[in-house]
Length: 272
Image (cartoon, rainbow, N blue to C red; front, side, top):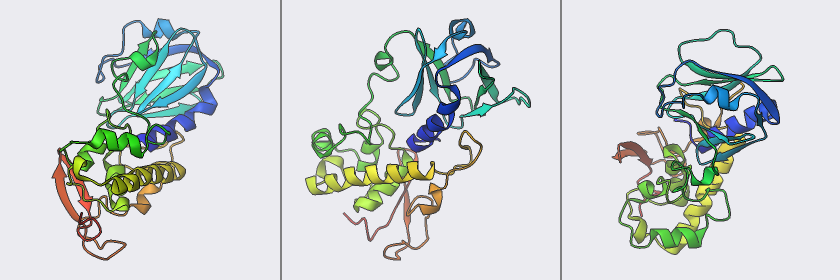
């Protein structure tokens, strides 16, 4: 699944081509995504200008004249900027044509993504209103995480992947941040010391910033908007490395299941 760095990489990739550009037409081939694409959306967005492109959590927000297009990449979705609408395949669900000749294409083989519209402030949209702070913002700090963790019995990995606590810390980056902070993923959130929480906040920010610099993690279903993969996967310390030697202490990496997700950790470096 594309996570925060991949979505931000996509935003940065498409921004120069479509920001401040007017939409000449929109073609919807399949409305049956995770949430159906609204009927009549093609008419609504026609002749509107995309003024800015923002990211909130893993949602891309295309702010137009009278509202905002909300795009979610789901499990396997991607956005590409093309200079024509040739070579359409069965998973190319939406094309947005711009006055400058470029086409923004939404492709989603598993159809877990979304293309929605709101005329109200996007902050109040039901998919966004409940979300926690951005992990790279000043709002996500030790005091905030300490307050949210008090009394919580859920495992710390599950806790930091909860979008109502903090957004965008997906499975890969949760594994990596916990390793960096030396925290066992099964430790109850409320049992972690303030010192360790400070280290975890710092680790989450560092691992996400590093992934952003690398252009997002290479996943089977994800490619950047220019068609090239990201390269952060080459620097993963624990994720996907079960049985391999820890890069820090050489102990074999372990794997367990948490909330139906694979969790990787070093039993020596993350013993507490």
